Length: 164
Image (cartoon, rainbow, N blue to C red):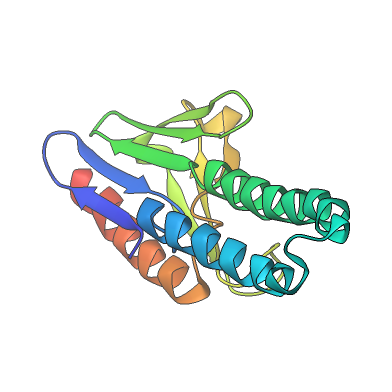
């Protein structure tokens, strides 16, 4: 599961999106792709046509490299939920924007699972505030799979209940 719970004082839940390609996998993929794209160029080695096709080969390889790096940077998203008996603090570190934070009194925090009607299946939200009047609802783990969100929902409920 792409989240980890530490039950020290304070209890911390850290969530991150899946990263299926390792740095070594990136190098291997780019190398194999470059080799396969260059394979047809062997037939025109030594002819002036090679120089006409070479820029397109370089642009295609650069496009693949750029798209994979961009996807990897976008995957640097992270959410940290810190639960103490007094407060819950959620911090979302976005890859290209500033951090987003949410604070609430642990006593007023409730965990909700929206099986349908949310932007994704099994949408998990936290609802609460520092007082009963300023309750706000925030999402958590929207990048997880539906089964992982369902498991996260159960774990968050038990963690918040155990902290009180």
